[in-house]
Image (cartoon, rainbow, N blue to C red):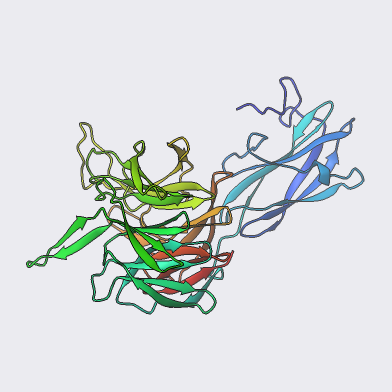
Amino acid sequence: MADPDIPEGYNSYEKGGEPEAHINVWELSQYSAVLKINIASVGNRKLTQLRACYSETNPLPDTTDWVRDIYLQYKPDHEELLLSLPDLEPATNYYCRLYLANSDSGSYTNSVVFSTKAPSDDSSWEKVASIPWIEEQYTCGFNFADRYFALSSLYPVEGGNKLIEYLPETDEWVKRSVLPFGCRVGPVAVVAGGKGYAGLGDIEVITEDGSHRYYSQQDWWCYDPEMNEWERKADIPASTTGMMAAFGIEEKVYVVTSTDYWNSTPMQVWEYDTRSDAWSRKRNFPGDKLQRASSFVIGGRPFVFTGITNRMEEGGNVDDNKVEYTSCMWEYEANTDTWHRRVDFKGGGRERMVAVALDGKGYAGFGVQPVTETYLIRAVDWWCYDPDTDRWGRRSVLTDWFNIRPSISFALRGHVYIGSIYDGVWKYVE
């Protein structure tokens, strides 16, 4: 793409323009850089433009890349100034150069490359609590503005159907109720219209020969956190065998599901209206069918990302041995019932990531990641997504995490938490 700030025939750095400056690296951290700028000459005219252009991929960044206008920092009687570039990604290479212009000509400075520092420890994380019911598993919950409730699931142990609440004042858990639908494998839990909604998932049955059979469920329940009461709602009129994602937006809940993960049946999108207690079918999800994907809702904008998929072969057949770990990301626009492809998750394809939104940003990480076709690792990295710039940035690591993946995650009173029965509850501090 041509640089829109340099008209045809206009002098540029490559052609030897008159304004001249030099740029050097001054200070680096994990998330920012400070560059030192020396203005050598402004030419025969007064300087009219001074911009910093930087990029992760372009060795000669220009004004079509990321730009910071620093003209107001320039003082004619000072040859030096410091340029601060915040909100960078750790352990990442960047290229940067300046664009200068006067009324006669424009030019670029030399291009410098620098690398932000890599996270080297777990200093962003603090272990704050344990989960006392270690015989159970917790994989989802209700994340209200100032309260969080976790639902037990997975293990059909005696009494293993609790709803528990986390108390950040004392970093303790308390039991609030039993789950009216009993123990489930992979239940759904979302918040919409000030209430919690849960259900679906599978009932696990162990047969006499020791085999495990799973039966998907369609029941739907509402939880009132003020009254601590459950109420049965309308069942979803769809199969939940191939659940991909569920999220709440204002007064509505959206469930993306299919009859199976590995056949040609598309991923259906169903909308539940909390006011009318009714389900309605929306347009199908346009991307690959995903299993074990992650999602968060940032300011009313839902995003679904990563997971595993099994691409269709010619003729609509599926090879179960060709599972692909994807890094794709989609945003759903409820008002127009459309999906938009967004930038891929930068940490690579993986499944079962933990994800949560806070203060206009999305946070995600951990999960299971392939190294080879037969070897998987537990990831320990933590990332931040900015929906305004459509960018992922690495934030920290948590090497003390031993579980294969975090089981629950939530945002509460300005902090992000993750937890599992094995590792307890950890608080993230930016």
